[in-house]
View 1 (cartoon, rainbow, N blue to C red):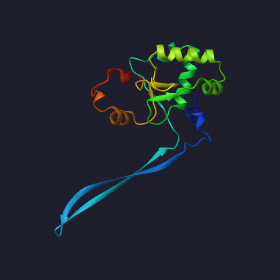
View 2: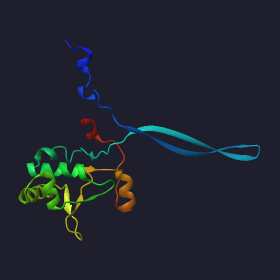
View 3: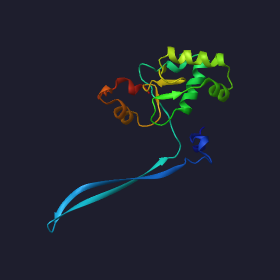
View 4: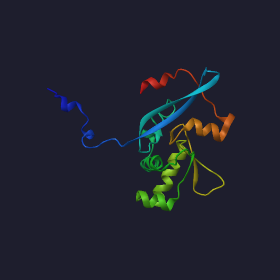
Length: 169
């Protein structure tokens, strides 16, 4: 028989979620009073986590991607998740640094790069050594739509509507 304690996630004990308050201010045009137009400012405060989070997107095109990666590819994929910059669609992957951080050989690094290229997760960024484009349909850290629209304008395609696949997860 289950008791109430068995239904509480054990990782919650003594592990508070670190937060901070964020305030947003919105000014709305008010009504005329005594011939003067008064604006109204609304302040909304919400609590947000202080820790960074990378989004890993699941969709019909990549739902099994993670399971198909080789061990070197998976290791490098997780490395990217933890090292991607905010609002960036490129990442620098210097073999010497990655190999040291992950305690892997140059050969394992190369196999990881190959696996991620073959899985369409990264693509070489020509013009700068060790720089790679990230497929932002798979992972992103930041505000993806806002970043993409500011960087690439009309090249960004947004599709609004029902996503049949979203209900699967």
